Length: 135
Image 1 (cartoon, rainbow, N blue to C red):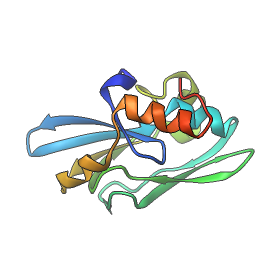
Image 2: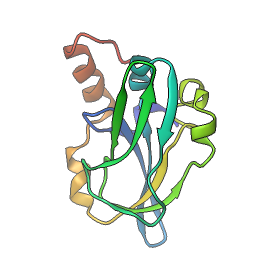
Image 3: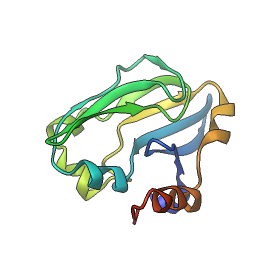
Image 4: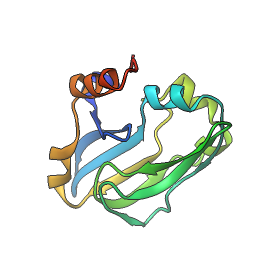
Protein backbone atom coordinates (compact mmCIF):
# COMPACT_ATOMS: atom_id res chain seq x y z
CA UNK A 1 0.00 0.00 0.00
CA UNK A 2 1.14 3.50 -0.70
CA UNK A 3 1.13 5.87 2.29
CA UNK A 4 -0.57 8.45 0.06
CA UNK A 5 -3.66 6.17 -0.02
CA UNK A 6 -3.92 5.73 3.76
CA UNK A 7 -5.54 7.65 6.60
CA UNK A 8 -3.51 8.49 9.70
CA UNK A 9 -4.26 9.06 13.36
CA UNK A 10 -2.40 11.86 15.12
CA UNK A 11 -0.81 9.08 17.21
CA UNK A 12 0.92 7.67 14.07
CA UNK A 13 -1.28 4.64 13.34
CA UNK A 14 -2.48 4.25 9.75
CA UNK A 15 -5.65 2.73 8.33
CA UNK A 16 -6.42 1.40 4.88
CA UNK A 17 -10.18 1.33 4.40
CA UNK A 18 -11.70 -1.34 2.15
CA UNK A 19 -15.34 -1.98 1.33
CA UNK A 20 -16.09 -5.66 1.85
CA UNK A 21 -19.21 -7.75 2.20
CA UNK A 22 -20.69 -6.79 5.55
CA UNK A 23 -19.25 -3.29 5.64
CA UNK A 24 -15.96 -1.42 5.79
CA UNK A 25 -12.80 -3.07 7.07
CA UNK A 26 -9.69 -1.17 8.15
CA UNK A 27 -6.27 -2.72 7.90
CA UNK A 28 -4.25 -0.96 10.63
CA UNK A 29 -0.53 -0.48 11.24
CA UNK A 30 1.97 2.10 12.45
CA UNK A 31 3.66 4.61 10.19
CA UNK A 32 7.23 4.40 8.94
CA UNK A 33 7.80 7.67 10.81
CA UNK A 34 6.72 6.06 14.11
CA UNK A 35 8.90 3.01 13.48
CA UNK A 36 11.91 5.25 12.85
CA UNK A 37 11.24 7.21 16.05
CA UNK A 38 11.01 4.01 18.09
CA UNK A 39 14.28 2.63 16.61
CA UNK A 40 15.17 -0.88 17.85
CA UNK A 41 11.93 -2.78 18.48
CA UNK A 42 12.02 -5.64 20.97
CA UNK A 43 8.38 -6.54 21.74
CA UNK A 44 4.84 -6.12 20.43
CA UNK A 45 1.50 -6.92 22.03
CA UNK A 46 -1.33 -7.47 19.54
CA UNK A 47 -5.04 -6.98 20.17
CA UNK A 48 -7.25 -10.05 20.63
CA UNK A 49 -9.30 -11.33 17.69
CA UNK A 50 -12.96 -10.69 18.50
CA UNK A 51 -12.20 -7.72 20.76
CA UNK A 52 -14.23 -4.56 20.34
CA UNK A 53 -12.15 -1.40 20.13
CA UNK A 54 -13.05 2.28 20.19
CA UNK A 55 -11.33 4.88 18.05
CA UNK A 56 -8.48 6.38 20.05
CA UNK A 57 -8.49 3.47 22.53
CA UNK A 58 -5.32 1.56 23.34
CA UNK A 59 -5.41 -1.87 21.70
CA UNK A 60 -1.82 -3.07 22.00
CA UNK A 61 1.71 -1.83 22.55
CA UNK A 62 5.12 -1.80 20.97
CA UNK A 63 8.33 -1.70 22.95
CA UNK A 64 11.72 -0.50 21.81
CA UNK A 65 15.01 -0.24 23.63
CA UNK A 66 14.01 3.42 24.24
CA UNK A 67 10.41 3.17 25.46
CA UNK A 68 7.11 1.33 25.60
CA UNK A 69 4.50 2.96 23.37
CA UNK A 70 0.78 2.21 23.37
CA UNK A 71 -0.91 1.45 20.07
CA UNK A 72 -4.22 3.25 19.58
CA UNK A 73 -6.95 2.04 17.27
CA UNK A 74 -7.66 4.63 14.58
CA UNK A 75 -11.17 3.17 14.08
CA UNK A 76 -14.03 1.77 16.14
CA UNK A 77 -15.03 -1.83 15.53
CA UNK A 78 -14.36 -5.51 15.97
CA UNK A 79 -10.91 -7.03 15.52
CA UNK A 80 -11.26 -9.61 12.73
CA UNK A 81 -7.63 -10.68 12.40
CA UNK A 82 -4.15 -9.91 13.72
CA UNK A 83 -0.76 -10.34 12.10
CA UNK A 84 0.45 -13.20 14.30
CA UNK A 85 3.83 -13.28 12.51
CA UNK A 86 4.68 -9.73 13.54
CA UNK A 87 5.76 -10.15 17.20
CA UNK A 88 8.38 -12.70 16.17
CA UNK A 89 9.51 -10.66 13.15
CA UNK A 90 9.49 -7.02 14.28
CA UNK A 91 12.02 -6.16 11.57
CA UNK A 92 9.04 -6.36 9.19
CA UNK A 93 7.85 -3.01 10.58
CA UNK A 94 11.05 -1.38 9.32
CA UNK A 95 11.16 -3.25 6.01
CA UNK A 96 7.47 -3.03 5.07
CA UNK A 97 5.43 -0.84 7.45
CA UNK A 98 2.56 -0.35 4.98
CA UNK A 99 2.26 -3.87 3.61
CA UNK A 100 3.63 -6.84 5.54
CA UNK A 101 3.80 -4.75 8.74
CA UNK A 102 0.04 -4.52 9.24
CA UNK A 103 -1.10 -5.14 12.82
CA UNK A 104 -4.83 -5.83 12.70
CA UNK A 105 -7.91 -5.89 10.49
CA UNK A 106 -10.93 -4.24 12.10
CA UNK A 107 -14.55 -4.26 10.89
CA UNK A 108 -15.65 -0.65 11.33
CA UNK A 109 -18.81 -0.23 13.40
CA UNK A 110 -18.82 3.57 13.59
CA UNK A 111 -17.83 5.32 10.38
CA UNK A 112 -17.86 8.75 12.04
CA UNK A 113 -14.39 7.97 13.42
CA UNK A 114 -13.00 8.24 9.88
CA UNK A 115 -13.60 11.99 9.83
CA UNK A 116 -11.02 12.44 12.62
CA UNK A 117 -8.23 10.79 10.62
CA UNK A 118 -5.69 12.72 8.58
CA UNK A 119 -4.88 12.24 4.92
CA UNK A 120 -1.21 11.76 4.01
CA UNK A 121 -0.55 15.47 3.32
CA UNK A 122 -2.06 16.53 6.65
CA UNK A 123 -0.10 13.80 8.45
CA UNK A 124 3.15 14.98 6.88
CA UNK A 125 2.32 18.54 7.93
CA UNK A 126 1.69 17.38 11.52
CA UNK A 127 5.07 15.62 11.67
CA UNK A 128 6.85 18.60 10.11
CA UNK A 129 5.22 20.96 12.64
CA UNK A 130 6.65 18.81 15.41
CA UNK A 131 10.07 19.36 13.85
CA UNK A 132 10.30 15.89 12.37
CA UNK A 133 10.34 14.62 8.82
CA UNK A 134 7.78 11.83 8.21
CA UNK A 135 9.27 10.70 4.89
